[in-house]
Image 1: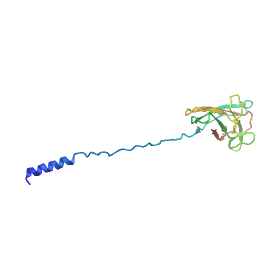
Image 2 (image 1 turned 30 degrees about the vertical axis):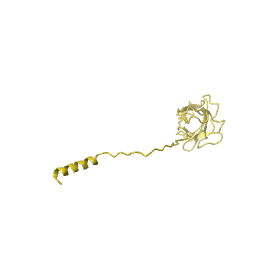
Image 3 (image 1 turned 180 degrees about the vertical axis):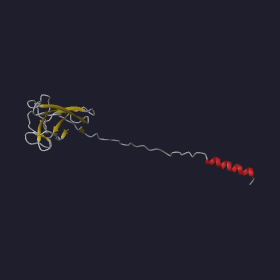
Length: 169
């Protein structure tokens, strides 16, 4: 084979190698893909803090209660029950009829209320706990009203308790 003819064959083979292949469909078929999800009912409750500060059983709180407020938030899925109720247990150191904070060796009584007048105690069952209207993904801020009764004769020092909050939906 002559050199020119060999170059023409190589050129033709090279051109064929770079031609993109075309795929021809013989037919088509279609169907549907069912897509679904279920939005679950859910609520969350943030941890709150109620810090009473200093309690002076001799002068300031010898005759006056120590009142303070705390807040927490509740967020629920839209479309569930229109309202939820919020319960609080009696705390880790409860002794009927008092919630109590523990110090080194003694206890300091306190109470939790649903209202600023501190007349409606906060419980942990339906009817003893406040009801909150849901606001979808927007958190609802809830206030808890606390009171340490006056004239408790206790040792100086820090006192604490932990109350379990529950959102019932």
